[in-house]
Image 1 (cartoon, one colour):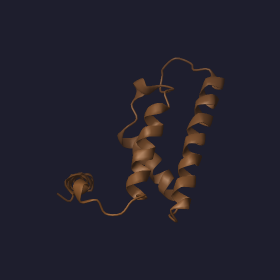
Image 2 (spheres, helix red, strand yellow):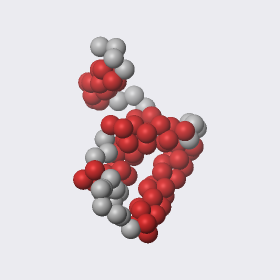
Image 3 (tube, one colour):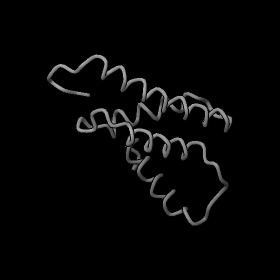
Image 4 (spheres, helix red, strand yellow):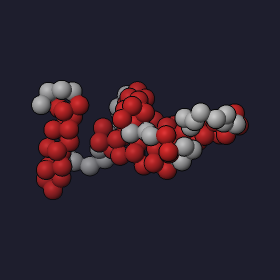
Length: 102
């Protein structure tokens, strides 16, 4: 809700509560797979710095979907899938680029 004009405090609080509920659901997913719940915090920080743009305003659908995808990559619910190997290689290349290792 980056805006130069005043934004109603109730709208900000309501939006924050919706985001928190989404994060709590993902924390449950992460802990059920035996991983550190801080993964959710790290994923949210990634979304904040790399994906969130002002026009998204109070829309939470993009956040919910993007967070679920990131958590799914960190805590996969299936074994190795040869059919997605090429995508995993693309993902590794993107991560290397973000880290300045390419």
